[in-house]
Length: 233
Image (cartoon, rainbow, N blue to C red; front, side, top):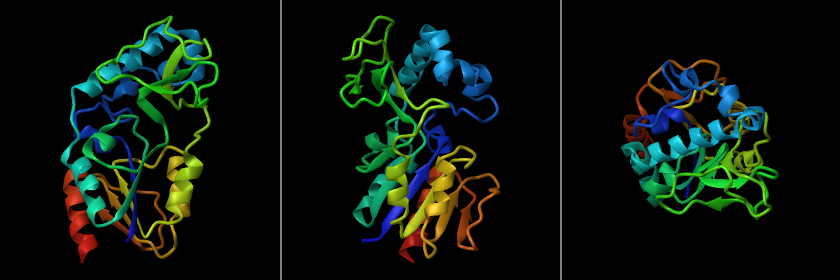
């Protein structure tokens, strides 16, 4: 069974109605990144950061996977599909994808402020419980914080993502600008014989793929539909 590895970014979840971070009018326009997505911002104002991610969880509870999410999950019938996502939502899992690697953490999980990657302190919030409060404690007694990889923090899952990418028969990029490292660097690990499909309605620059890159200038859902047709040929 062919191994299809899919790297997804904010453009994937935008079709579900989730605010993107980088586009005009996105979350970074309203919330300075250094205030809500860095360890320093959290140290300065933990209440603001906790409230910001509570709002993101509440928004997530009100949206559903888009058709693109569902089609990627459906592809598991014919291919060995692994999703590597820069998104912190759980829409891939809710759509039915069974192998999902979250590079930047998971919005539905919380962890220790003292040791964020301690597996004993990472826990899933119960379904329907999106709010964390100051005073809520992790197992080690520290304040519960979002299980999110902030700017300036290590990306623990990147090694696993590299391993999967190195085994790809087909590599697909959906809805990401490929401006954020280390995720953008995964292209360097795609096997030389593997075709690369980029699904994005905007022009794509900066991808050096030796002529094996196919750009499908469509949104996530329409692009995945076309991808399914192309892979079956």
